[in-house]
Image (cartoon, rainbow, N blue to C red; front, side):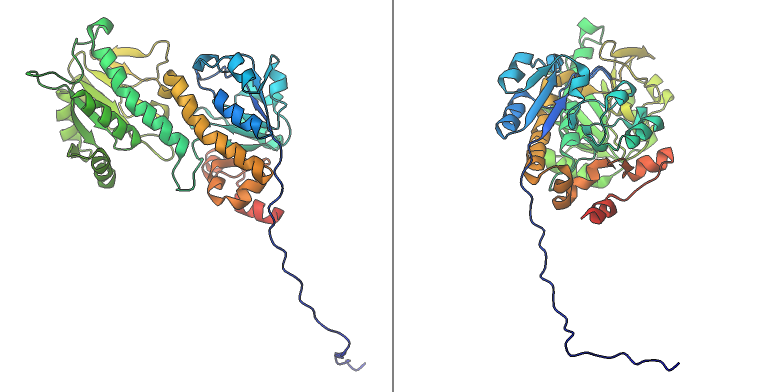
Length: 404
């Protein structure tokens, strides 16, 4: 059988298709639920009455569990006047398609979660369990974490605000524990004319370190900052605007400075995993009795070997005569300020999601928000979490592209 040659017909013509543009969809009214936090000594609430009022006037519905804002001194009356619906049954709040929490999801929440729900909350890596993530994956949850939420400029606004609060608060806490009323040394943090200034050592030149240094300098203390990143030390000096004593973390030098200080602050950050432990038990044992250690990085393991987690109820313990303050969630002790800071980030984000027609549409247009999403419709999209718990990782960009 001879092969036929392809025949080209003149009646057959190719036409170009018109290009289809990505048209923005109409805005969608959103239904947001805010439950009362019961775990992690959490006093913050993620949206203030003012923020709720803006969301409601933009056509969104907000449900708040009875007394959810109580610990931050926001009353139910403030929320109902802002247009929120106060709900007395916890299960009803969890029926909202979008949940906004100021503490991580806990096991007791799992049965209440809905299919395809969007949850905006922090994730505490230190207490996260694999089973929790798997249950959320089964319910096809989309999870957005506070810690990884980026803004247009590539910074993490909520983490930054919480670090500013923690840094500023550190010196107020230290001043409190140095006074005689709290069995401290009876020293005024800072100093007055004719008396040598109090000596403050800060380990870590990130945002916490910078704000702690600002507060200490403003009180008149003498401040010494240690960090292994010379870039961070330079940035801290430039931001504060005058010369400071800075050094890389060199054990002999650090030990020498700790022996003579009144206050030592651990403010080392770590992107993933545990904070490096740079102060040994021996260094602490050589410190002056009555001096104060505040380990801000305790939620990531702490950078003093003698640190142990304490609570807002019992914040301090003594070891080698040194007062240790190791409360993991310092901003929660200044809950009203912290709630306003979180709310300032989340309210515009929710408004934007509403205008775009939901979070899925929003992350299509706003690529910087993708890093904040650790789970998308039940797919785990955070590489660190998948590696740590041995769960399947899915690239968020691929999921989004395949859905268009």
